[in-house]
Image (cartoon, rainbow, N blue to C red; front, top):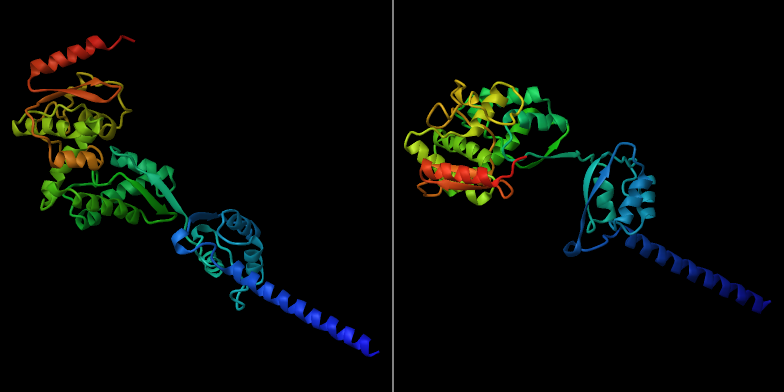
Length: 352
């Protein structure tokens, strides 16, 4: 009888020991499950998209597959049973979240309930006009083209950013932007204008310029933007225009004729410029009028802005595209050289 009792005590002792070990293992597993996967030095970021209707299980699986949590079950059960906040139910909200592998489970748990707004990424290339920029934004669902153009004529915005013009044409800096759905059109435009202001501050030659002087540089930059193809030629093209302006010679830029036809007259982009187009009576016609056009003909990028702010010092007055494949021009100091460059190009280009 005594031996039987001792045996029972041994069994009970083993059960307690196994229970204690199980508790220790369970606690260790729990601590491991809620701890970060990596430290901050070795962290990786992941953009987690949670569309409306996505389940907690699906989110748990994606987090685990991307190596952001130790166990999909840990997050799933933490969310299902409100482990980190017993006072309220876990509420998964749609949005786009930046999740880091160095974040503990509780931080991810809280983050996915904030409803982070989804960003709309859009890249605005150099050389777009105000109306084309409006179309790009409208197609991305950020705002309507009409409200964008209307806001670009806002006297309040023009005054706020000290723009001495009737619209923001030229000041809508081309770049990649991240907007949010339902963003006010004024806020959209301010992002572009703030970026323009920041980029201008990077150009030493523009420091100390008045609003009027900056506007003149911007007009020249917009023409350069539409003319150059090879980046290293932008300052040379700017020098041609600067030399012409200094001697009261018309810029004779086909880009300004295209602007008249497409932006002012609302016609489709022409396949070629005709002689009759060169006779259009419009202040933007740089074949009829000397000096700069009244305003920018597009929104130039940093290359064109830098070139217009500090043109190369040359005695060039002409340029012609002679290598379309590489986008390179031949520059000339007089009309005779220019005609020879044109004729040489015409002879070397095979007929279609």
